[in-house]
Image (cartoon, rainbow, N blue to C red; front, side, top):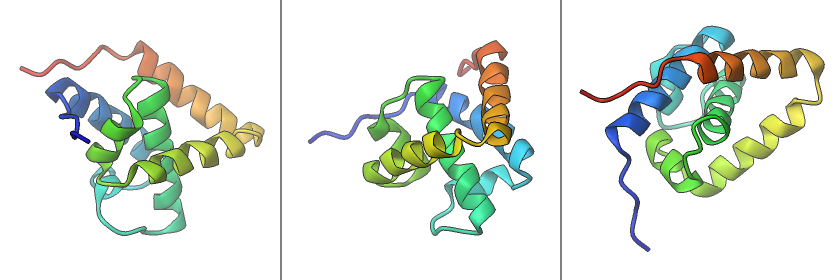
Length: 111
């Protein structure tokens, strides 16, 4: 199977997501794509960033996996975990606030 190449616009969109998620979860955005798991807070923040990449900007699981340097099954698992956590009203408000911000943000465009 051929690997899809991520466009510069995809990379910029994901950087926007990572910056917003990092602020909301009090982690460093550059740590979201580091190899390894990291702290539980980092893991959840990364899962949220992956989830938002798919749900807000509609990137495929394969493209999202490439950007985050993870396997596609990890992306599937992240989306499942975030959906389960959305049953918590406080967590759901956090995600809704991030979604709203990202939908209203100007679309980043590569130069």
